Every structure is written in structure tokens, then in C-alpha cells.
Amino acid sequence: MDIQIATLCDFAADYNGKMVLSGTFDTLAAQALPVVHPQCCLALRLCITPEDNGQHKFSVNIIDSDGNSLDDKMPIDADMPVELPDNVPFMTRNLVLNLQGLKFQDAGFYSIDISIDDELIQRLPLRIVKVDKEQQQPA
Picture (cartoon, helix red, strand yellow):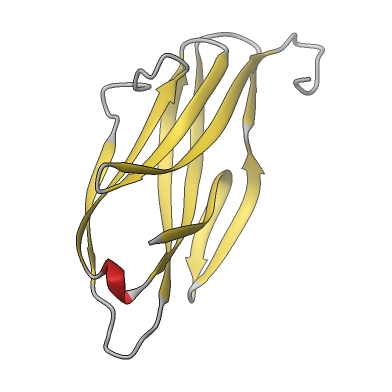
């Protein structure tokens, strides 16, 4: 099982098998800390082959630079059954995880860890930057 797309974004949707993304990002600017990011999405596109048939555990964990989970709701775990029809060499599936009310206590580096069957398969970096009110964008 391969991840073809993995990104944080403002909006994501699956439209007839097509991934629709808007506003991908890897940095959030905050005028004060802690900061609560009201809403974002983790958008994933998985490529599945017959070797992946069976039951799998899918997990997402947002961690700080010390490896601690962002909050007590993490990690987010889900069962992920995979069964490809006969004679199908691969399939792709879009997954959109809507994340609301993410609270970041401190500026710094965070990671979005994506695991399948307890194996880390993708790590997305996320930077939280404290900015002055006059500053438009983080450096």
C-alpha cells in the first residue's frame, strides 16, 4: 500500500474518485499561543494492490517535537479492510480526515504521523510560528 498524496489543507473532498484540494500548507502563523486552528483536512490518496488484501489498522497521530501526542484524542485509529476484485492490478482511494479544534500549546515543529499496521509510512512536518500583529507571513 502506497501513499500517493498526503497533505494538510484548508479543504479536501473526493468528487467521483478525483481528489479536490484547496489551500495546502505546512506552516501556521499565530499571534498568540496557545493557538487553536479551527478546521483543516488531512488529505490522502492510497494506491492499493492485491498484496494489500486483508484487514489493516490505519492510524494518524499529531505529535510535538518530543514525540508527545497533541492531545488525548490522538492517535486517531480506524479499521481498514481491503479487498480488490479479481484481475484488478491496483485501486486508488481518497481519504479525507476533517480535523477541528487542533490546539497547539507552543510554537515549534510538529509532525503528522500516518501509520498502517503500526508501521510509520508517512510523516508530514508542520511548523507553528508566533508572529507580530504587523507581520503578514512567517519567515
